[in-house]
Image (tube, rainbow, N blue to C red):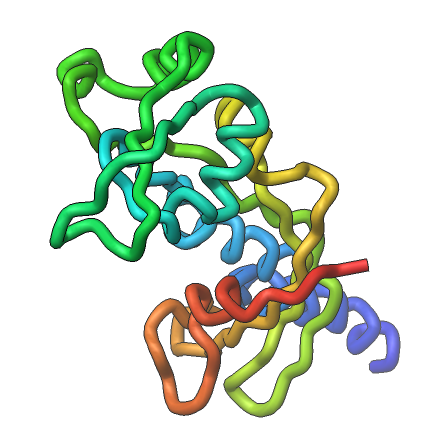
Length: 200
């Protein structure tokens, strides 16, 4: 009788393992894959670059300071208008080096425009550092960084800066899913990325 039971036990264990989808177990690998394939991680971060008359607030923004440091834009003092404030205002243009860099990032039909949307970087998951489960909910902590898509993105998003975020997961009838829309008090992916903290 004991031998018969010992022979049947491995078969029962094998049947149990094959009937479970990998999505039913929230492992670090599953969490990594679901986070990495989410829309928030795949969508490029754009920079809206405006040339022509700009306010001092825009001129002193971090993005424009970096573009000036690389010599991609130049500006001359200009008179403010009713729509563009606060003073002082600036007439901003792309430098010859800036034209070379930006031209490859925009469609040719956009060459005569004064506003360009440049895709700069995409978020890249580096590791899942922890999972905390409670019932059919879980919080997953992960570390990510910006991955530059071009020269401008590399200038604005240093590759060595790491961020730590926490995002919610829920266990549904077909397995674990990343919370991308609000569910109770859980944090969405966008909220998790906006509240990211520098990681050591």
